[in-house]
Image (cartoon, rainbow, N blue to C red; front, side):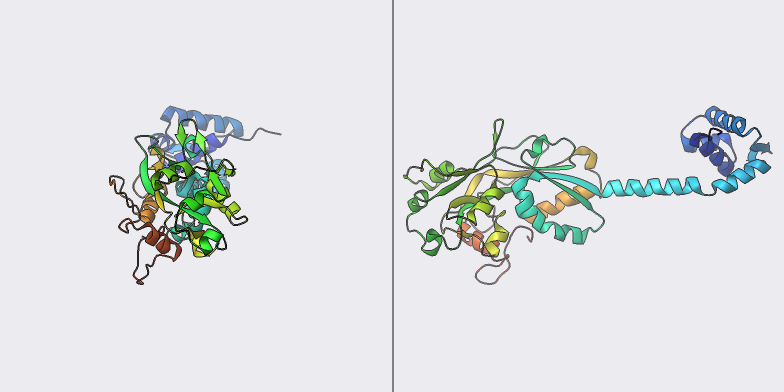
Length: 338
């Protein structure tokens, strides 16, 4: 069996016939005219006959060259179109790495809004326990009590509240003294990645609230907030959960808030768009802008009221849980619709 001619030589042959000159074919293929000439010679040696002839300064096909060109047809044009289509597809793919809890509790439930606006987007979501260490993602989102680096931007300041099942005793009969919370069965959420802490602890909540009660020695410890949310629906425990991440569960009546327990946590959500994914109109940039619109948090502001409700965290919880309307029926800020 004869060796088939190289595709590189056939491509050079097709380009020479289409352009008529070695120099023009060389410019298209990003090689030298000598390289094009060499490829043509290799092709003619393979078939044993001339394939091109030069007339009046332009190359045209011989009889055999015309036959070969007819068989090739628009094969290389279709290859070019396929490559262009593949390139456009790659530009619409966005790899996003985010904390497990944010990805599963908030992001997954809001993606339909973005996809409805940008049906061309191909979002690849990777939940991670350590998003900052994921190397190849176009967008990274982390939950931390400090800014991970100069290129990171604030997405939103987190607000936490004590939550439990609606039939929990402290929900059915709200306590007059929040020390009663600390006497209950507590669910602890804690993560640690090196020196970076990514959870809001009961000890910190007690400190902010100014409660004298000691923390109980025992309690269930969960490595991530979404695991705590799942556990709270199954047992009579109390957990410190993000109002944003629990918004869907609050609205559906799967969880409820102990009145007066809301506080702004020490942690924030931070976002970073990799340099390679930036650019005017890039899907990654558009997605990042959409996230910022959802939370409408100005990274330069130092406000102690991330809800925009004048510090009334109880009202904030009601607004988030009720789908964005305060008790007067007016539209109010809420995640995903602000």
